[in-house]
Length: 275
Image 1: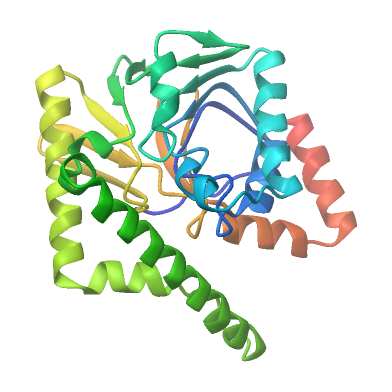
Image 2: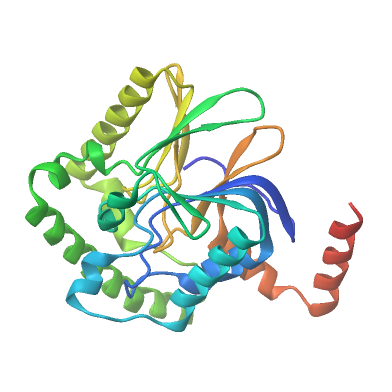
């Protein structure tokens, strides 16, 4: 993962890119996302796939209030003038039938070209189009999703113990993803396939999601950027008004902000308003 951004409160950026939120899935970190959305203002909000986890909702209908609050915050931004673009993924692929339409104030696209202020063209898509398992064997993809859910449940117990010991959050799923040879090879092949598609489109970079691995890197002549997810990593890509794009991890940021005394928080807010 590339170096994360340090972000002030409140945040004013040109564009925000989010993917793999998985609303409706028990592992979704909706509370952190609500905190991020409430503190962030942007001109463009890109929802880069797997925003709603219809796969899990078909098996078990569970929809906490925080998940509804996420949708409410997104729609409020759209009503207030933020351009909201939804690019569906494999978990919310049913929404792809609305590609090219505007639902309420939300644009739906299968993929889209984002233009930065410094003139670069960035291809934005979820990325499941390049996942051979999803394309060729939906059953295997569903099994993988179920195993991921099991790992997250195990992770909850592990981190409960770590908290009692005063240790930081640790991800079992991410550890296995980075250590298991086949997983590492899969990630590499996925990134290469996405970059190859971007090169064919004649763009300068690509922003995607799907593999739950936040990243900003350079692959030859293409900038590869992955939003990560809001299940474990709680990451977003932020584009500033000069076109610079950074990766933000909000889980740690939210904890730091909540740990600030009320007086210090008020001082920071006043300083930001004066800036």
